[in-house]
Amino acid sequence: MLPLKKILCTTDFSAPSQEGIKLAGELASQYSCQIILLHVVPPPHVLTPLSVSAGKAQDYYGELTNYAKNSLADLAEKSFKREFSVSPKVIQGNPSDEIVRMASEEKVDLIVMATRGTSGWDRYMVGSVTGKVVTMAGCPVLTIPAPEKAPGKGVRA
Image 1 (spheres, rainbow, N blue to C red):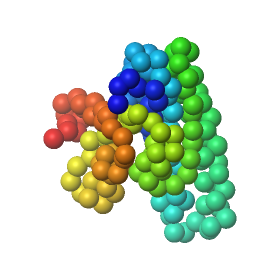
Image 2: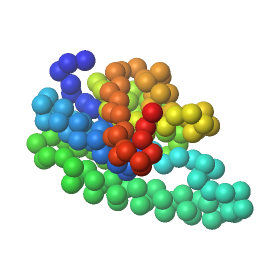
Image 3: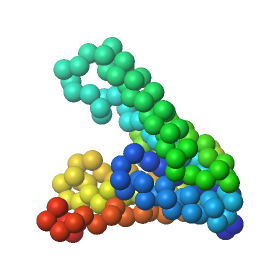
Image 4: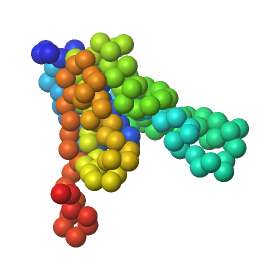
């Protein structure tokens, strides 16, 4: 695994994923390696209610994908030093499957991704993208836990 040449860093634009981006940047600086900054837009059926027509759902999906591309390019420029290569990529599909596929295709040495800290019913119903990636990936996965919440604001168990 060491020295690192290529890191896949995932983001869903949440606060926890910012922690993963920071760490990926530190590793890239340390090892002078390339970063692939990845956002996966979930399938339209996950994003839209049943009452929305298929045409409107596709339009919304396209807008969401374009917004993600612009946001990711902006995030890459603001978050990383110019001393190493950063490739922002937005793809569509099931997040865990697409992350693992991208890691394999790009032959990355490490996947860096944050966890949201979901538990109980949320984790049972939705599943953990991070957990699925950890089990399916063909390379090491570095998981960054969600930051602790302030007391009285829904403290993580």
